[in-house]
Length: 210
Image 1 (tube, rainbow, N blue to C red):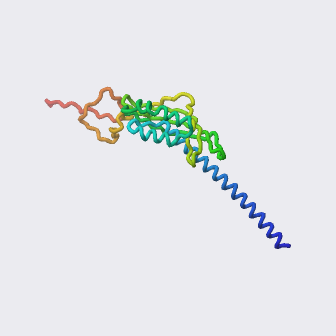
Image 2 (cartoon, rainbow, N blue to C red):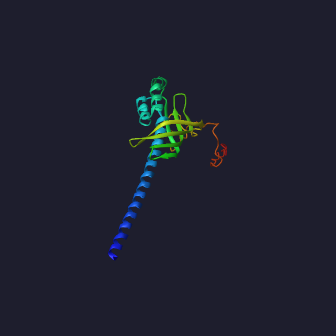
Image 3 (cartoon, rainbow, N blue to C red):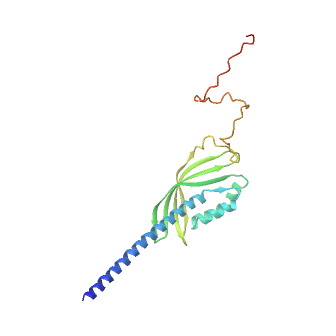
């Protein structure tokens, strides 16, 4: 009788352990899928907002790798020639970077997600550089384990951002702050004076007759 009771208790414990293991595994799997969806949203936002006029084939390939569904796919195909004509030989390069990203909707069963992205774009072009910040809403679909955008919607207007002060206009020729100063170089009279700099007093005049 005692042996039978022990067997029953052992069986119950085994079932309970299996249930807890399954729930823990399911929760871990869902968290991992959410992370994948957010990573896909970040990458899609970058690819859909980056342009390299010097390599438009790669630009198109990156966009295609991050979209699915008729809306975005047809939109790209319909505007591809116009896009190429607009940017060819312009030298324009726009690089996007994600500042903040979050999922605002997620369904593991349906393989869908919605994300809000705060994005910064830096554009270099012959007429000058510019930086903008924008907020986007992305809808995503899980396609064979890869999360791709099915829709992208700007929220509000783009916000122009100030470029870093003192940044060289030619990135190929940065200034070296540690470069030695040439004492023979002419002084710019309009340059600001550092009040903390030590003053070198002028030598006292000598009397040639004494």
